[in-house]
Length: 81
Ligand SMILES: [Zn+2]
Ligand SMILES: [Zn+2]
Image (cartoon, rainbow, N blue to C red):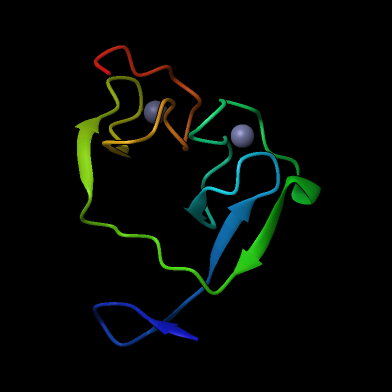
């Protein structure tokens, strides 16, 4: 189990299509932009680095990793890459 900064247990998911680690709330694969149904992500013990962010999505203000192609929250394409 992973513990977040506040000491709470945090569960992360991995997208089946690209193997990218995402928080539970994200609905899109940040690598390929696929809309994620419940079968498209699986629980993982890997760590999602909340601080490795480089962009703020201009649609939903979600933090986007420097190595992600799409916003995991709304699927917006990151054109700055
Ligand atoms: Zn994908
Ligand atoms: Zn977004």
